[in-house]
Length: 396
Ligand code: GDP
Ligand code: MN
Image 1 (tube, rainbow, N blue to C red):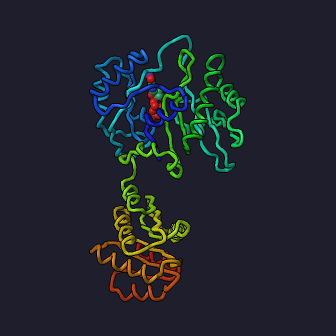
Image 2: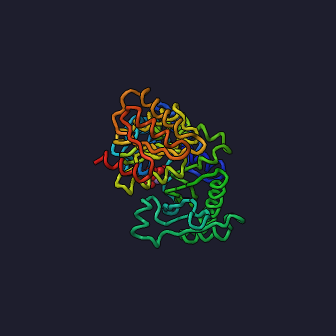
Image 3: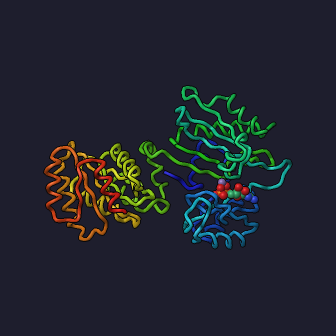
């Protein structure tokens, strides 16, 4: 589950990570009220207005703006809320902005220069350990840094049995070129950041930039936080942080009817029982020259109602040019699935894309007969390869 910047920052703050403070606002008036409150609490005169969407690069797209007085707060918030924000990370249509974060300006002048760093916490899948990835090149696109100046990216792997050790926190602060109070602040920052990552069951923290202010405080100016969905049951209070407007509409609908669905870019819709078979089916479609339009695991009980729900979900994707149903009848009998497909098809009236059904396992022969005799525009197959070839033949 992805969070908005303001939600991610709240979680960080609750674990003692210093953040650029802000208040979320849904319209220009709320933004002005928020700005006044922030001034009272933090003494800030200037504010930054930050579009809250699930995509980065907002600054480049015009979604992060500095306001030097309340009139500008009102004007800028009014402009950003409701806009269709296009950034390097959104589609070309962009994303609608429903709310902004009104934040204190933390780039104020002072005794030293400000500097921006990049710090993320994530799982290194190769070693099975969490790691802190960091760079002196903050505020920039980290992919560009990785490509052009990879020697400026450092990593610190954490041994899960002892957690982040003090010497590691110090090494990070040292490699970032800090000294004095900023050095101490950074060791505190990364230590609490790592604790927050573990305790919140996150799968990604990306803080870009982490700012050293002109008076040597270290704080998170941005926060990209992803929580591991499989751990959400341990954090019931996070459930309300989910913003369905930011998620893929078809995936949200599939989830509501209990289907395991992931939207993909191809043109062959897949309906499969079991995640492993679904993966194998997608591989086979690719091998035969097609591209899967989705991952869809209908689960163990592929009855007519579920098959119909799955059909409806798959057909919502306008890119789908053929549907491959690949079901292994182990616990569920193939003839029942076949009947489910036939009933669903009849129920749905017209389905304008060719359907290839491959049923294998218990009563597969009866199932094939049912499909072949149904008079519907459905092709049957018993072999895996045969099914994939039939899909290819209808696409050509
Ligand atoms: P992103 O573009 O979506 O990654 O959004 P960020 O939260 O990283 O903000 C983009 C940029 O806005 C940052 O890199 C900063 O340079 C700038 N910015 C953020 N907060 C402030 C602030 O308080 N004052 C000023 N002057 N600039 C800020
Ligand atoms: Mn950023």
